[in-house]
Image 1 (cartoon, one colour):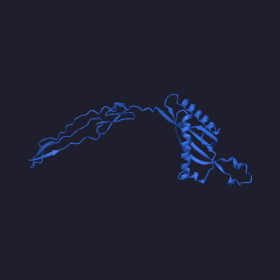
Image 2 (cartoon, one colour):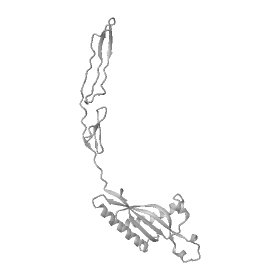
Image 3 (cartoon, rainbow, N blue to C red):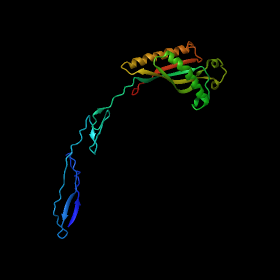
Image 4 (cartoon, rainbow, N blue to C red):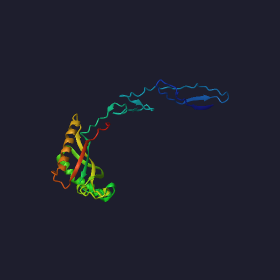
Length: 227
């Protein structure tokens, strides 16, 4: 007599959601006749699919759920708290022409002269903006470039055009921390108006800073998704 262990497999074509488990079946076989004295049997256990909530879907192992955004947990029954920022950053895009001579070093942000100028500009402007502009957060210098011709050179008619000294145009963002509420657009525009006033005072030499601007432009920055 020969004792064999026979295993049964799960039918992959099943669409009932049931899980079929297999157990070994002991069959005694007569070696002489080759006939089995015990018929093959399969033990089937039906397991209910995991009950996912809030739009979750079961993983293949049926032990947990794949949860959509905003939910967590084994069955996606726990909502993820939404974190709302108290303030949002919104910049005002500003360009000012500084009454200083532009040099070729200002074309390269890696040069010492460029870095020194930017640091000096920020050191002068940060406390001034902070004092005059509501919700002011910081200054971010974007680029230095040639500005308008300096006044003292305009009078020299015989001077070649390529020898006329240019001012330094500083493109920078005045970054504001605006309260994140239903009135944030109004709050932003109110702060924007204060940026204009601060620049006007600077241009009129009434700011008492060791920096002089010839002219300026300021524009509200578009909100993400707007053009």
